[in-house]
Amino acid sequence: MNHKKLVESVKAHGPEALAGLNGALAAKALRPHELDLGALFIECFGYSNFSHCRQHLGDCASRAHDVMTRARVEEAAGANSTAAFLNITQQFAYSAVLEAYDVPSRVFVNAIPTRPSKFKSERLPGITHIGDEVAVVEEGKPYPEVGVSEDWTDTPETKKRGMVARATKEAVFFDQTGEFMNRLSFLGEWLGVNDEKRAIDCVIDAGETANNQYRYKWRNTSIPTYGDNSGTHTWDNLANGLTLTDFNSINTAWQVLVGITDPYTGEPQNVTIKHICVPPALAFTVPFALKGMVKRTAPGYATTGNPTGTEIDNPVGDIVGNLQVLTSQLFRNRSGSDTAWFMGDVGRAFEQIENWPLTVTAIGAGSQLEFDNDIIFQSKVSKRSTFSTRQPRAMVKCA
Image (cartoon, rainbow, N blue to C red; front, top):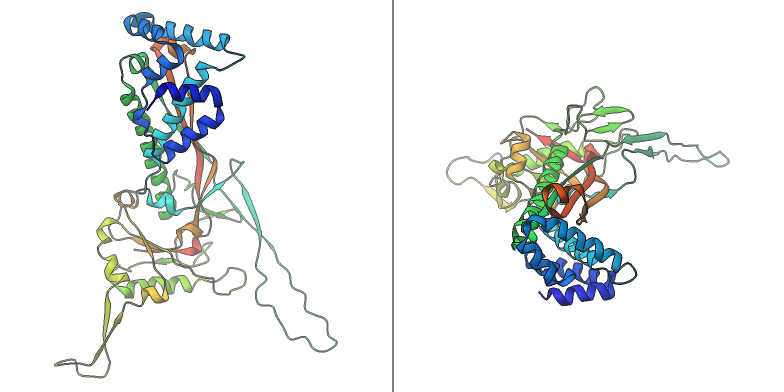
């Protein structure tokens, strides 16, 4: 990577050049580890300042601070070297974090849709369905009047999470850029792990706190995601004793879901099943439940010798649909079970609510940390969000 051309382009074209840099990093035409903080410092502030800092580490932070401060004053009316240094570094820092954060192995986060929000928590208003109130109207008689009633759910409060990575003078002047980028990658990786754990907790109804933060809060009542039809849990989506073995297990779980009705109209709900969530212990059982041939012996015939039987393709795909398998060791660790499995539409049942997505903010020299700890550059990674149960009737738990 040509650091000189990059700095010149950012100074000359500003946002356009940074957008191009961001695109190149997103397309992986450039990789975060190609950045050299030392080379970037030289192109922004000159080799003499870099050389002085390298040879006199005792006053390195002070010298860097003076250089950046002077650059801001001298270039206030034109191209700003300090801004170029920070903006370029921030693009690479964001790419390093995102590359480690946004990986396919976050299977549950990727299955749950994200909705932006401006509020800490929300009351989502709705109205009940009218139901089948269609009646025959005799000649000259008035049409029957139908109406709806108020309905609502409350979402949990969003929480802010984040961490900071700092580049010391050694990272800039002793060629330790790779170490700094590794720290940024760790930030992205562990923020991603935290998101995945919270997504799983939402699916399995583990909750983040003692008050079960992610649960369905319907009409001022917090209701467990899974349970039998009793009390405030007015539907049955818990199949106790149902072990995952073959297509019969899928059939039984499907029958539980299609048996759930609308709480106001009593009509059957529209059932769309897209996911089956299993621990690793059941991962190799899933193909026997979803694929392969099914053989059934016709009743009433001999059971010895050569009984009459029929062999067909597994009917799950034709009747239920093609299910996406969601599994991970993290799922087992959060659920604490090798036998519990879940089926339904994860994207319809749950959502992630974001006040702001993963954000990387950079700040350069000039802070107290620079004086106390020789911090030349620091990058903050933050996100504010929560997971929420939107429609638990779209899932069934089998244990």
